[in-house]
Image (cartoon, rainbow, N blue to C red; front, side, top):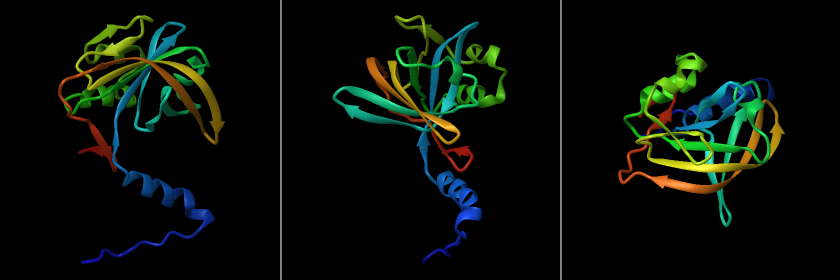
Length: 166
């Protein structure tokens, strides 16, 4: 049985149609961390992907209005914490449900070699260095080299789609 297609007019409603299309794309959830002037800062991100294996690198898209954005620059360390299914509370906290200064009180955090907070029990933790930042529209495309990886034995990703978790 075929589903009915909804046609979205070009240009004027392209943004609304695009938002609807992207809500249909399931994504893993990660917490991006770095150092701020007053301590660690972090945000939840679903727009993260592997970029290359040689050298190991990831791509993260970060809204320029996000508090973490002003703390990022080429050469700075960042942490990428890929969440497990049981870490919905961490995702919600870093997605805005908890005030910025209290976010690191949710979940168990341990420092990496750069003193960046890394989430214990995450599926994976990546210690990275920002290589480049390219502005595009409302966001910056951040390319980061992966310097170190810590993996959990279990693979149970936290998946986000259409405003909720699967």
